Length: 291
Image 1: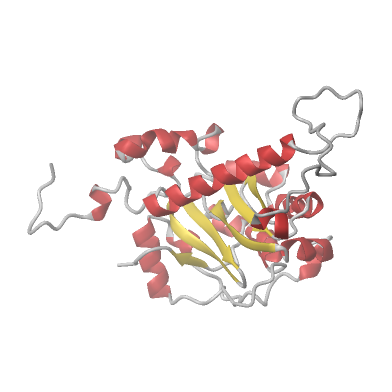
Image 2 (image 1 turned 90 degrees about the horizontal axis):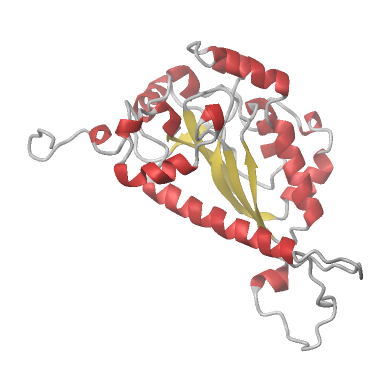
């Protein structure tokens, strides 16, 4: 029971957050988990039905049903069959190096300049509202057309071709400039952005988690970094296995190397140090209202 005046209560007292918002905003999390489940089921089905032409093969996950020719001659009736629409989940437990991720993002077929400037005042408001240190919520003065060039990624042409088939992508992402900030990747058509949605639950005392969400939150924990992760669903037309591999290769390139990860781990407890080591040129739009 909370004392209040005319029903006015600080939202951080009832939403399971500590000096800011936790990552599990219901709408985003519920939608995300459903999308991840569907994509992984799709991946599993695709893997289980790959046609196998080896006569001696006894692997039950391979398709031995001569699917290359359909005796029933049944026409394709789904969008996936007609347009080659497939989805997959990119997952990693390493943070992105923001500069390299920015290089990959510029290979996407987007038309909008998403690295807009924020005033220092608004940046301070975002940091306070989201419970993220100011240095980790601030936005550099570079625009999306400045900074890294496509040539920084060695296989830019193939990555651009593969990413051009993506019509929708969304999910949680972790940038190395902050150990607290939980980001959400949101892309549809020609628009893409990263949202600052709050703090990772690993930074919030467990007794402040919403009781009905505690089990789901724990499901996302793995190792010393808790729920910090990359978990992005990609949906593409004509998304071949080769293109999927090319996208995954580009995103893996953007994650921290072993040496960088060691440096990250050595500095997580030093205020502002990660923001200095791993400069972030990407605008993080605050999700939800900023009071």
